[in-house]
Amino acid sequence: MHLPLKKFLSSMPQLGEIFSRAEIFKKTGRKVVVVQGLGFVGCAVSAAIAGGVGTDQRPLYFVIGVDLDTEQGLSKINAINAGLSPVDSPDPKLSELIKRGASENHNLCCTFYDEVYALADILVVNIPIDVKDRTQTEAGKIEVDTGSFKAAIARIGHLVNPGALIVVETTVPIGASQQLILPALREEFAKRGFYKEPQLAYCYERVMPGPKYVDSITRFWRTFSANSAEAACKAREFLSTVIETKEFPLCELETLEGCELGKLLENSYRSANIALIYEWTLLAERIGVDLFSVIDSIRVRSGTHCNMRFPGFGVGGYCLTKDSLLAQWSLTNLFDLDITLGMTLEAIGINYRMPLHTLELAQEIMGGPLEGIRVLICGLSYLPGVPDTRNSPGELLYDELLKAGAKVTVHDPIAHAWPQRPKAQLLANLTDCLGTAQLIIFTTAHGEYLDLDAQKLSQSRPSPPLIVDAQNVICDSRAAQLHGLGCALIGVGKGHWRARGYHKRIQTWARS
Ligand SMILES: NC(=O)c1ccc[n+]([C@@H]2O[C@H](COP(=O)([O-])OP(=O)(O)OC[C@H]3O[C@@H](n4cnc5c(N)ncnc54)[C@H](O)[C@@H]3O)[C@@H](O)[C@H]2O)c1
Image 1 (cartoon, rainbow, N blue to C red):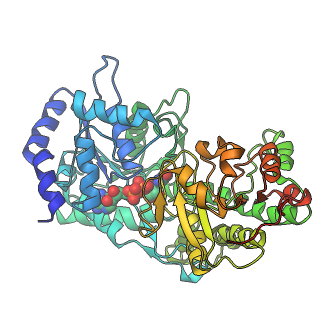
Image 2 (cartoon, rainbow, N blue to C red):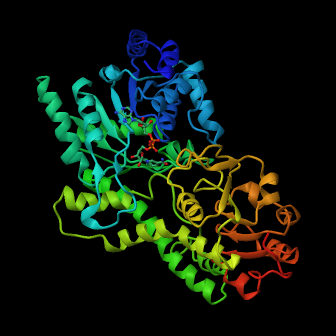
């Protein structure tokens, strides 16, 4: 038995205890909800469901979260059982809900014993289904690992009460409900002698792990579909107790495929918009245009253009970097269709390569090779104010800088570890980092960077630094100040800085 497990077994409720607590809830007419997968989505979903109360202010559900018996799974199980959030979140509501559910109302507990599926009136699936290589954008070559997902669904089919409602929230390939999930459930039911059709709803998540983490579940629009009128009715009833549907009405689609497609289209649409602006970013930089103010002037057209994206460093996170690939994989592998989502795939490729433009800007402002240069990357997460570093576009920049021979240090005010690049020199004290950097690259618009004053930023020794602003961290007045203090600056989408000559230092700078 590995070490963490020993530690966790003592704090995790035993199966018998979970069954007795669930029975007490059931006896009072309340339902048991089991959530499979306690990651970024599942932990918040479990907490949100546990937070639901009836008119008598009593919790509506007994919620059991299930994750794997792995080091990562166990740490999530343990955190929630201790009343703590397993993810570092800027939203205080998340930890409040977990504390209330696990430590005060005692209607939220977690385990790795999946036998608890048998207790579920409602089972919510939040485990991943992933593409093998997010950089592979050639239609026939995209690979999706469905094995562990299908095995997890089969396990549900093996244990769950056949009358339970299964709500899949995982982002799945189009056709997964009909071609992967329902067949796996039917097969397991049949092995147990049940020939009742499973009750399945598909209802994708729109969780945003920022300051409105919980509200992005409970106070946001949701779309769902189900495989029967009975399942749809149960799903609507359940979702209405978790989501504030009076303000954010549910949208029910006729087919499961339509709903699956909706999630992938939603993220592909956003990804394509980002890629489109990248193309215009390159143009604006070349002809001296400030693309930010241009886009501001266009976004006033509310209803048609208010959502235009701004220039930036790149695309990261768990969803936007894979969902278009899942869509293409479905067409080829589940529908056997000879259709290529050309623009969609092109966009995902452009977005993946986007950080290389920041590298080019770094090389340009350096005016020579980056070998031996002390480079500071400011910002690891793909969104400001969020400590999530998964698929951060910073990975590609970091790797390329190392290849170019630069001495790279990294700073982030809220992401205190970079599990995807464990060897990176991640420093906590920004003042120290700024003091020695020759080249500073802003890759996330964290508040701490937006607030940096020009004196502090220009203090590098022996010379003021060169600055690449890839995420609109530095406003024009600060740029002018920094340039006056001896810095040279270049920015993604900031053609006007180049036109003003900010990319050249006022004083000549000798390389040290
Ligand atoms: N992260 C987001 O912001 C976001 C937003 C919307 C939708 N989604 C989608 O939600 C799904 C989950 O995403 P996530 O970010 O929570 O992933 P995650 O990797 O953070 O969490 C998944 C969890 O599931 C657990 N798990 C895997 N197999 C399991 C099994 N058989 N039984 C129990 N637990 C198991 C893992 O250990 C992990 O803790 C994905 O399909 C994702 O695309 C994510």
